[in-house]
Image (cartoon, rainbow, N blue to C red; front, top):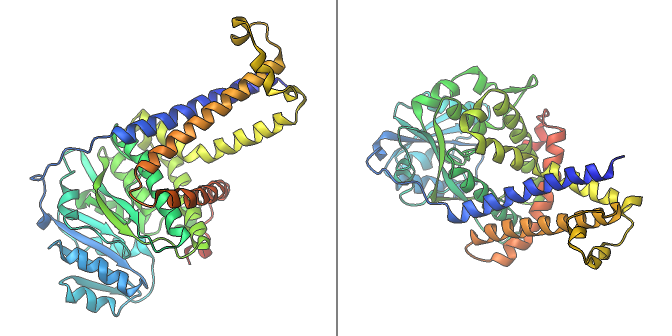
Length: 410
């Protein structure tokens, strides 16, 4: 086996990964918010659409009250859920549509948009509370080239470790999306709160492709937000974020549900990552979109490959020389690898790998921490737990991306 060649491949991967961390961290920290166009669209041109299924009543009431305070039209589709949701909606001036039999989110929002004729539709989940001025804030990010705008998402702190882990994950995603925002479209507008041009997404949402979406012949109920985001990008529009509009949502109740959620997200992400590469959506969005999507979705696989590779070489004969031998180099030609033995070459490669991996990780972690307003240490600690779980769920999701297990949705 050509050990030196394999180590050189590993070094190249590590260097590219380091560049990924640097680009994301730098771009996220110094990203400037898009210019506002307050006169481009008005609140009377938007309808809020919310599906609801057995949501916590207090959370739902808070979400509806926040929407009502925006003085916009809103429509709630009860996916087999009726009272007290209907009364809460109508008390606040909204319209309620009841679906007797549960059909899932895709079916609910598809039915809902068939009743909407305003220029824009704001999709929002029933556990998401928008801030005052959210509607006008998101609409102000539109221009002729923008097809959809997503809100920034933060997780409500309920004192549980899982809420800290979830918040850390959201801030890590924000770093990547901020970096993508510097070049154009982001990879996904979170379905928890995003506004689209109605006429643009309506044909998709009323289609059988959307309502009865299938993956390898199996009906899929996940990934509606990724499908919609990819659709508008392929149509030639941009998908952007309104980072100054921060919507609050709930975390999962426990880590078991957190794991299920991340498996769903992983499967959906890999499916649409592959689709967007094949159907031309990624090319439409540009090279930076391709680079970011590729490394974001494949980073767990890359990390696994590096870990396995390094462990293997630690126990191989080529790696038996002490790392400390590199510290004995006294000649410039040694540092330039002229006449250096394979063992010393490997020692140098190990040091470079360690430095770049450590610096890249610390830089990215620092960027994430900079986006956490309070309880940083606790969020960072539980964020480590979340990252470990995310690593395994991402690998498992990739290995089983064609599955649509019902137990994951319960």
